[in-house]
Length: 94
Image (cartoon, rainbow, N blue to C red):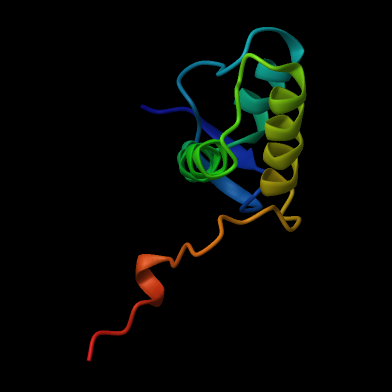
């Protein structure tokens, strides 16, 4: 049986991650408060932000930016968006 967590993004019990995505306290916080669904959605947005903004994740300021965006995303605060991105669910076929 999969473990569940009270997801801070969705404010309900959902399936949790199998392991911490980061070492240390930050990873323990994520595994205790973020659902698998929210993490997968964050991974998609994170990839788009890294690509769109051409971030170099070896640079401390890029890592700091991504962590700030992750915190905003998980706390349901507005995040930076990718220019020109249209969610497939928003497309209306004629």
